[in-house]
Image 1 (cartoon, rainbow, N blue to C red):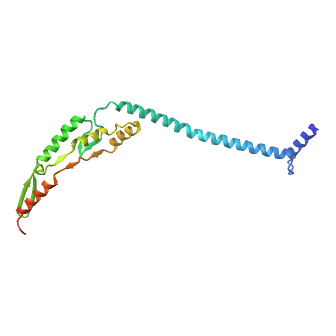
Image 2: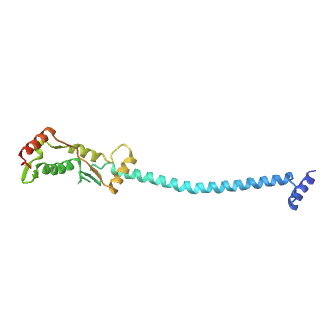
Length: 193
């Protein structure tokens, strides 16, 4: 009986009978499984071709990031591409930046402010209304760039300031009542229209 069943199966397969026999269904099922397995294998290969390079790239980026962080970890100067109020403080220590900015701000504070109106000219100094610049906090902010607890953020800050410089503003304070009294005094000195 087994030889006879095998002859029927082989006869059905060889002759291509269109009547669905058990053997034809079995062969069709095997063919479908084989196609599915081939497709899965191709898909798996495609995934591997994508996953492996991405994984290698991520490992390389991680290694480069770590090396970059280790190189910059002992840097005691302000990172490249940082300026305060348009004054470049890149590669300066906090003390050097303080000296440079104090000198420049001191020069500006000693300059006279000239007020002209028709034939009237009045002069006053910023010192007269107690102008102060918070240089120290601006320097601390500049120095803190690239020095957080996150290596990736530090690397991003260092690289981004190299590509796009960072300008930090200095906070300025003045005595408003002194400024108003100077303006009122100048107003009394102005000629009538």
